[in-house]
Length: 243
Length: 348
Image (cartoon, each protein chain N blue to C red):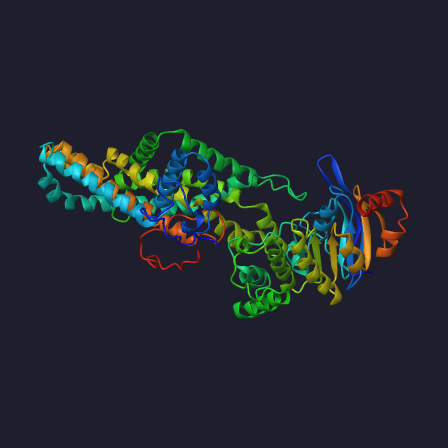
């Protein structure tokens, strides 16, 4: 079985069925890109994987451990699966270092000195070694998002989920964030990226999934999806965005 | 980028800031801010409006400077003192008597401050809990229904409604008679039964008001913040303790300061059941026994103003020190020693 896999995920909000039985497999060291129109349920799918949303039906497995088992603490699951948000969501009252340290200190119970060391290391890794004491409101969008990536990395997660990490950024910042993500992919970090950056998906992804109306319509290598889409819906989407 | 860079205020006599038209333009105005555009329009428009605009901007800028604010406070206090002495000189009341007797009021004033502060702090503990209950109404979450939370939520809501919906005077008498009838000789920590009743009534009252302040604070914390907390693996309790509470406390500073001041003034009402605090002292000892009605009132005004103005300034200072750099509008400088409260100034 794959590193992280989902089987038959279903989720409804009221009468709106957002996920309609989704199967997904992410191999170890693989970069998976999920593309598709807005409002199709991509974010919900991602949130189901780390149990920020509990699916109505279906299972999620990480290394053959059933995460959707009610006996498993969601806190433990989220320590294994990092997440990066569209709007960064850095803790506004903490500086960059403390943002990265918070999960280490209180979820993983790492000592203050060790957590600090790790935070400095991860912030340097995303190129923010000179912003250790800066507060989120003092950083640009791109810098904030890189702190958020460092925060996820610091937990040594088995998978990192990216929920449209560049959608709230200007073109220059998009580039700096994508560069960090491409570097992670090169280091064989397992990641699932919901994105509208088709260039990134084509270059970096090992597997691309086209998602629409709560279902995976098509999946394959970037070349399969972008150049030889099988379904009519995928082709229409590609025609629109690639022109 | 957080605090306003201390731009030197435009000097009164300097060219380009007074009512005169602007000849060479922008170089002699303080850098930054929105002066450049204003200068451009002011120069091309009529001289009158340019002058008025410049003046009003200068007044606004000057008022924003802290030391001037402080100076204004001192000036207005001096003015008040002047009126105070002038009225004394006109024999409205006896200034010498007031100056001689005022120190006697410090003991009762201390009682009032103590009752205020103890009820305030104890009430805060309860209000954080009740505020939390009120902030997140129970709903079916993740398929698990938390039925046990409904009675809790109902209690908190009913409590707040009852406290905010009735006058404190009525609440106080209810508590007072309840205690008088059930434990007529009750004493606690050396307090007589009146003080115990008054203390309890005020505690119950302030808890209700503070609950609503905390509810507002907690609900104002962005959902993204708590979601990010969960996403790094924190439990619900940790998310509250590490994220919602520290952020909520900042949002709630001002409403809580209001509540302390309001609490302090409400203590006057406790004199109705015989709690010997500052209003009781002024009414019974000064106005009643000595017949000095006007002097009693003047002394009350002086004591209440002294305490509340001090508290306001301390709170402004706390707000400034605890502000998150780069977020929101900074509070103007406060002329208090930087490390008065032992808190590091992180705002620059």
